[in-house]
Image 1 (cartoon, one colour):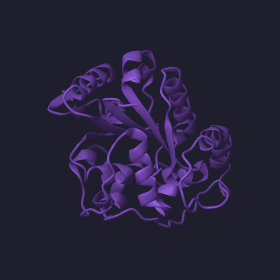
Image 2 (cartoon, rainbow, N blue to C red):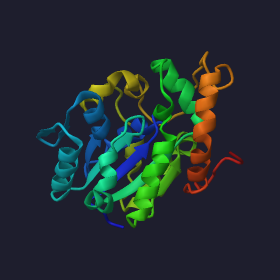
Image 3 (cartoon, helix red, strand yellow):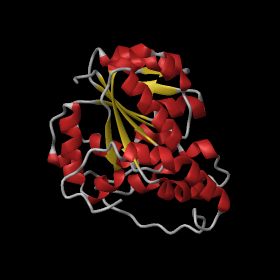
Image 4 (tube, rainbow, N blue to C red):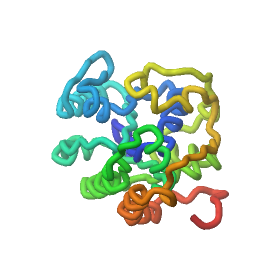
Length: 244
């Protein structure tokens, strides 16, 4: 499916900005970082040379821009942007892809940055809703496991490129560290990516986890069935680790 727009939908704290940073090394895409969340959180975002201030205008601007060159955007599902479900022109113009992470890992990472996080901000249930809308619109979505991405970055990137019709370039797996203007509206969430130069696993210890905090445990149990549904539909990566 050769669509003018490629979307990477992801729950928060799922390594999607590392994935985005990798694709910034390409010159054949116009990349947008979390435009829907920028609208939800800040009331504005940039699409090319245009500043837009509503979800409807964002969708229109992306569709217009995709007539000039292929657009890639990534967005996270801690925000809600329900208008997309009413825009079949948008849903049918997009190649929908998903980056998945176990909510047991998402939740403590998110809570460390936003201690008063809410149930919906885990984002897996909303990710599932977008997946169902994409299928209903006629797409065959691509789901990647972010564990595969950090453990087998080249194989995962190759599989992704093949699935969305992009040529694979090995040099996109390395870059110069530093903050990027593409994520300046949400920079505090992406300090690890700004310091990175390649795709690799990072270990972090959290005091609040699903095993120590009953609220976080409840969040986990709510989102787990949606995660398991999507995980079963993931792309199987060669050299995949055994088990889940």
